[in-house]
Image (cartoon, rainbow, N blue to C red; front, side):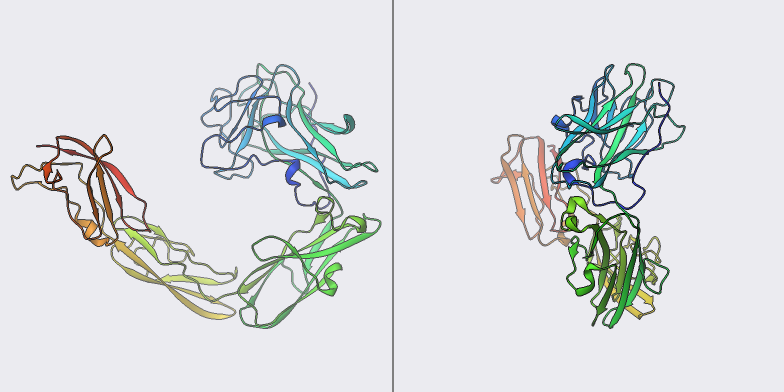
Length: 465
């Protein structure tokens, strides 16, 4: 066994992860994600992996509790997946992919987040990172034994290397180096491959923050600057902006320098992020071959926004959709009736009747307010049995709360799927008849559409005579 070697990752700034060269294993609502296919020679299972197998899963909680720590993915995303591996007795490929569109003589970082998921003694995992071109190894790196820890501790391991001249295609491989059997269980997440370059230190001039606020409707001039360490022989620069729909190049005269002047005239509300791209001059237009600074953010303070009107059943709760762009503002809701915390931007509201809440926001730009209306519908109580025998008691399947839903639709079918009752709009209880004849004793199945604000209800009702 070998000692653990700490990550040899990029010491400068990085470019955006190259999508085709790595994976975060995705996210979803199901317990297990999709297999990797040809990216590994391990067998995929939807459950606890045995030696030589893996799964894509949100949590190890339902896997081998005798061996595995209870962990979730590296970013703590409740819907995010990770790769959980029970390593084989012999070396095998955890992950492999081929990357195209690279630039020669550029430094890249090949890295992954890894955790030893054993909760007791056993063989520790060890991973080899290999970079190849046409089957020839360009560079490689071994983690050595990855130790287990008493608490959950993801570690990033990786390798920086420079592409040789005239090489634009490489293959990335992660392989098992230790025997399986008694241990060697691990999880992988956020496998990345991206350009590595100089350190970029961006600033908003005359501030000590990377985040600044200005007022909606005002005219302001803001200066950005960046100090770039000396790494590239012939560096080139490109400022970009992101207003929420992705990064795009700026085209002003100074957008290809390390300093940028931004002029806001009648500033529109929103969040404006800026970053500086840096690369060798020949590579600045190649997304796979350039690096990016951390973002600088300009927040144009908007009027208070209480969000869309809400609907809720009596006895239930709903989250209010307050929104502000100024991270230095104070705010509160009124009235406080039914709110879990009136000083939260998105409080939970549990009103007992229709109510209008007002969001008041105070900042250096002044005080503004906005209202949101919460409609409280009566609680829906659906009986599961009734006795339509004309004795004057419980003769109808009656749901009084539906009178508050003028768009409602009721559909009832028998076990063969035949519709025996259909009502739309004006509320009418079911009297247990179909075509003016009593339906047989038995179980019937309903769906109830209330309106566009609520999920369709479904269930069963038993007819007794």
